[in-house]
Length: 374
Image (tube, rainbow, N blue to C red; front, side, top):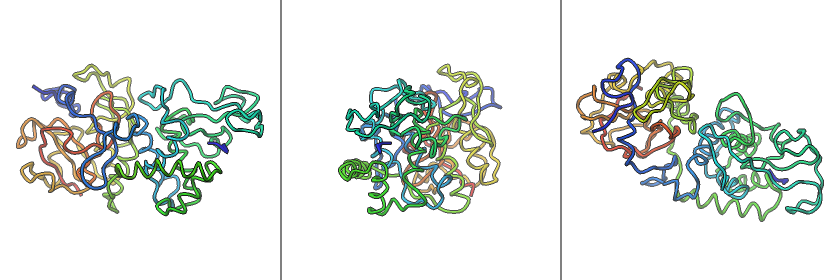
């Protein structure tokens, strides 16, 4: 920062004991939606935000994890992180962001040698041996959130749970920025506290106004639904914290993301991807509330109280499992499951090549009802 025919997951007859999620053929024609829900009806396309999907996923991941790192923080949301990153790096514009969040080529700011380049007139000597900024003599701000290396060492978090903390990883950088902005427990829903938090990021009121203009725009586009308390909260928050993790065919278990199996209809070898498929994600989320679900989407339809497709989406409540199948009345044909958030949205591990994210429940055409486990 400055101070600068359709296919099921493994097919309908697929090695029936394995997994069941989403077929690549079925979703190939589906509109790609962002991982952000609208506040009053409808959904927000990633294109509408001007943010590439993988960065938007990182902002959602960082915001959803704040209750773990700063439990007393209130009002942290993806829009706040997007507002900062818009000014600092234009959402890593021009860079490639890998499935795991790594950004290439890396983003570094001007050399802070006091020369005046980039507006810096105070020399800041190197503190990391050039580890993150490739400059062993002077500091440079690094990553999409433009942390100084010394600051990142103090606030850095492992946002994608891969065991490595790097300012050049979108998930790590977003989670770290969320922690920094929250401080000791700010309420970022309060305008004055939000302004104060942004001012600590860059002590310029012009900068604060610039960031706030972006936050206000993103706030107008959408926000994630309200999450109930209790066991339902534990389930939903656990799933939301996985946003941005890659889809892995057969991946995910009660302990978290894992490698999967070979191979999806589109050819993904889950054995080389650590993440979740659709039923792996729901299984993991419910395990955090002490509830054991079967491994496949079709089998999960037999747990709890079944909600028929004929009742429509309005019958769903936050925490319900959301099913998709070739026949809405035949559980054996179910090929995909999501976790309902409310407001017409679900947390979802869509398909190979797409990370865990928030989608509208209408993102797939063959709704097969739900199940209420809690």
